[in-house]
Length: 168
Ligand code: ADP
Image (tube, rainbow, N blue to C red; front, side, top):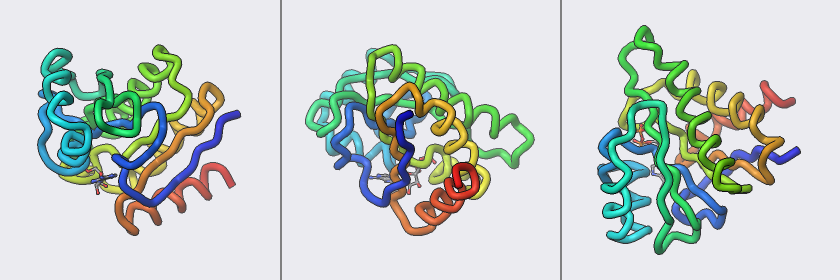
Protein backbone atom coordinates (compact mmCIF):
# COMPACT_ATOMS: atom_id res chain seq x y z
CA UNK A 1 0.00 0.00 0.00
CA UNK A 2 1.54 3.31 -1.07
CA UNK A 3 1.73 6.14 1.40
CA UNK A 4 -0.08 9.46 1.37
CA UNK A 5 1.92 12.32 2.87
CA UNK A 6 1.10 15.95 3.52
CA UNK A 7 4.20 18.12 3.26
CA UNK A 8 4.85 21.84 3.48
CA UNK A 9 6.81 23.35 0.61
CA UNK A 10 7.13 24.45 -3.00
CA UNK A 11 5.89 21.84 -5.47
CA UNK A 12 8.40 22.92 -8.14
CA UNK A 13 11.19 21.51 -5.93
CA UNK A 14 9.61 18.07 -5.52
CA UNK A 15 11.79 15.24 -6.85
CA UNK A 16 8.91 12.95 -7.80
CA UNK A 17 8.06 11.40 -11.17
CA UNK A 18 5.13 13.77 -11.75
CA UNK A 19 3.93 17.01 -10.21
CA UNK A 20 0.35 18.14 -10.77
CA UNK A 21 -0.38 21.66 -11.94
CA UNK A 22 -3.59 23.45 -10.89
CA UNK A 23 -4.18 24.54 -14.47
CA UNK A 24 -6.81 26.58 -16.32
CA UNK A 25 -8.79 25.20 -19.30
CA UNK A 26 -6.53 26.98 -21.79
CA UNK A 27 -3.42 25.51 -20.10
CA UNK A 28 -1.88 29.01 -20.10
CA UNK A 29 0.83 29.81 -17.51
CA UNK A 30 -1.25 32.30 -15.43
CA UNK A 31 -0.52 33.00 -11.75
CA UNK A 32 -0.37 30.95 -8.55
CA UNK A 33 1.14 27.49 -8.65
CA UNK A 34 0.81 27.35 -12.45
CA UNK A 35 2.96 30.47 -12.88
CA UNK A 36 5.57 29.01 -10.53
CA UNK A 37 5.64 25.67 -12.39
CA UNK A 38 6.00 27.37 -15.78
CA UNK A 39 8.83 29.61 -14.51
CA UNK A 40 10.71 26.63 -13.07
CA UNK A 41 10.14 24.36 -16.09
CA UNK A 42 11.13 26.97 -18.68
CA UNK A 43 9.39 28.23 -21.84
CA UNK A 44 9.21 24.77 -23.44
CA UNK A 45 6.39 23.92 -21.03
CA UNK A 46 4.03 26.56 -22.47
CA UNK A 47 4.81 25.26 -25.96
CA UNK A 48 4.02 21.68 -24.92
CA UNK A 49 0.80 22.86 -23.25
CA UNK A 50 -0.36 24.58 -26.44
CA UNK A 51 -0.25 21.21 -28.21
CA UNK A 52 -2.52 19.45 -25.69
CA UNK A 53 -4.89 22.36 -24.86
CA UNK A 54 -7.70 22.96 -24.14
CA UNK A 55 -8.51 20.83 -21.11
CA UNK A 56 -12.10 20.93 -19.80
CA UNK A 57 -12.73 21.29 -16.05
CA UNK A 58 -12.31 17.94 -14.28
CA UNK A 59 -9.89 16.56 -16.88
CA UNK A 60 -6.08 16.38 -17.09
CA UNK A 61 -3.27 16.47 -19.67
CA UNK A 62 0.36 15.36 -19.39
CA UNK A 63 3.56 17.01 -20.63
CA UNK A 64 7.28 16.60 -19.91
CA UNK A 65 8.67 18.50 -16.92
CA UNK A 66 11.56 20.05 -18.88
CA UNK A 67 13.86 21.90 -16.39
CA UNK A 68 11.90 20.67 -13.34
CA UNK A 69 13.22 17.86 -11.12
CA UNK A 70 9.95 16.04 -11.97
CA UNK A 71 9.94 14.08 -15.24
CA UNK A 72 6.29 14.96 -15.99
CA UNK A 73 3.73 17.66 -15.29
CA UNK A 74 0.10 16.57 -15.12
CA UNK A 75 -2.07 19.62 -15.80
CA UNK A 76 -5.41 19.18 -14.02
CA UNK A 77 -8.22 21.73 -14.20
CA UNK A 78 -10.21 22.13 -11.00
CA UNK A 79 -13.56 23.92 -10.76
CA UNK A 80 -13.99 27.62 -10.04
CA UNK A 81 -16.01 27.96 -6.81
CA UNK A 82 -19.42 29.45 -7.69
CA UNK A 83 -21.07 29.20 -4.28
CA UNK A 84 -21.29 25.42 -4.00
CA UNK A 85 -24.41 24.71 -6.06
CA UNK A 86 -22.64 24.21 -9.39
CA UNK A 87 -21.36 20.65 -8.79
CA UNK A 88 -18.03 21.95 -7.48
CA UNK A 89 -17.32 19.09 -5.01
CA UNK A 90 -17.93 16.36 -7.62
CA UNK A 91 -15.85 18.27 -10.17
CA UNK A 92 -12.96 18.64 -7.71
CA UNK A 93 -13.05 14.91 -6.98
CA UNK A 94 -13.10 14.19 -10.72
CA UNK A 95 -10.05 16.45 -11.21
CA UNK A 96 -7.96 14.48 -8.69
CA UNK A 97 -9.18 11.19 -10.19
CA UNK A 98 -8.32 12.29 -13.74
CA UNK A 99 -4.80 13.29 -12.72
CA UNK A 100 -4.19 9.94 -11.01
CA UNK A 101 -5.70 7.95 -13.91
CA UNK A 102 -3.28 9.67 -16.27
CA UNK A 103 -0.38 8.95 -13.89
CA UNK A 104 -1.34 5.26 -13.79
CA UNK A 105 -1.61 5.12 -17.58
CA UNK A 106 2.01 6.33 -17.75
CA UNK A 107 3.26 3.90 -15.06
CA UNK A 108 4.11 6.83 -12.79
CA UNK A 109 4.65 5.71 -9.18
CA UNK A 110 5.20 8.99 -7.30
CA UNK A 111 2.98 12.06 -7.68
CA UNK A 112 2.84 15.42 -5.86
CA UNK A 113 -0.31 17.56 -5.84
CA UNK A 114 -0.92 21.19 -4.92
CA UNK A 115 -4.21 22.13 -3.27
CA UNK A 116 -6.23 22.37 -6.51
CA UNK A 117 -8.86 25.15 -6.76
CA UNK A 118 -8.30 26.63 -3.26
CA UNK A 119 -6.25 29.62 -4.44
CA UNK A 120 -7.46 31.93 -7.22
CA UNK A 121 -10.41 29.57 -7.95
CA UNK A 122 -11.82 30.19 -4.45
CA UNK A 123 -12.85 26.65 -3.38
CA UNK A 124 -13.12 26.68 0.45
CA UNK A 125 -10.05 24.94 1.86
CA UNK A 126 -11.84 23.01 4.63
CA UNK A 127 -14.24 21.54 2.03
CA UNK A 128 -11.50 20.80 -0.52
CA UNK A 129 -9.03 19.06 1.83
CA UNK A 130 -11.17 15.97 2.68
CA UNK A 131 -12.25 15.59 -0.97
CA UNK A 132 -8.62 15.60 -2.15
CA UNK A 133 -7.35 13.27 0.57
CA UNK A 134 -10.20 10.77 0.18
CA UNK A 135 -9.26 10.27 -3.49
CA UNK A 136 -5.52 10.07 -2.70
CA UNK A 137 -6.11 7.47 0.05
CA UNK A 138 -8.33 5.39 -2.26
CA UNK A 139 -5.76 5.47 -5.07
CA UNK A 140 -2.66 4.99 -2.88
CA UNK A 141 -2.48 1.20 -3.41
CA UNK A 142 -1.68 1.84 -7.08
CA UNK A 143 1.31 4.08 -6.26
CA UNK A 144 4.53 4.13 -4.26
CA UNK A 145 3.84 7.56 -2.75
CA UNK A 146 1.35 10.40 -3.18
CA UNK A 147 2.16 13.83 -1.75
CA UNK A 148 -0.08 16.80 -1.04
CA UNK A 149 2.19 19.85 -1.03
CA UNK A 150 0.91 22.75 1.08
CA UNK A 151 2.45 26.09 0.17
CA UNK A 152 1.29 27.90 3.31
CA UNK A 153 0.61 27.08 6.96
CA UNK A 154 -3.19 27.39 6.68
CA UNK A 155 -3.25 24.83 3.86
CA UNK A 156 -0.85 22.54 5.73
CA UNK A 157 -3.09 22.63 8.83
CA UNK A 158 -6.28 21.91 6.85
CA UNK A 159 -4.73 18.87 5.13
CA UNK A 160 -3.03 17.41 8.19
CA UNK A 161 -6.32 17.70 10.09
CA UNK A 162 -8.28 16.07 7.25
CA UNK A 163 -5.68 13.28 7.00
CA UNK A 164 -5.92 12.61 10.76
CA UNK A 165 -9.71 12.29 10.43
CA UNK A 166 -9.68 10.09 7.32
CA UNK A 167 -6.70 7.86 8.18
CA UNK A 168 -6.28 7.94 11.97
P1 ADP B 1 -6.40 27.53 -8.40
O1 ADP B 1 -6.57 28.51 -9.53
O2 ADP B 1 -6.69 26.10 -8.79
O3 ADP B 1 -7.12 27.97 -7.17
P2 ADP B 1 -3.81 28.51 -7.36
O4 ADP B 1 -2.49 28.35 -7.99
O5 ADP B 1 -4.37 29.91 -7.25
O6 ADP B 1 -4.82 27.51 -8.13
O7 ADP B 1 -3.76 27.92 -5.88
C1 ADP B 1 -3.76 26.56 -5.58
C2 ADP B 1 -2.89 26.32 -4.35
O8 ADP B 1 -1.52 26.29 -4.76
C3 ADP B 1 -2.97 27.41 -3.27
O9 ADP B 1 -3.01 26.78 -1.99
C4 ADP B 1 -1.65 28.18 -3.44
O10 ADP B 1 -1.22 28.75 -2.22
C5 ADP B 1 -0.75 27.02 -3.83
N1 ADP B 1 0.56 27.35 -4.43
C6 ADP B 1 0.99 28.50 -5.00
N2 ADP B 1 2.27 28.36 -5.39
C7 ADP B 1 2.68 27.11 -5.05
C8 ADP B 1 3.89 26.36 -5.15
N3 ADP B 1 4.98 26.87 -5.72
N4 ADP B 1 3.91 25.08 -4.67
C9 ADP B 1 2.82 24.52 -4.10
N5 ADP B 1 1.66 25.17 -3.98
C10 ADP B 1 1.58 26.45 -4.44
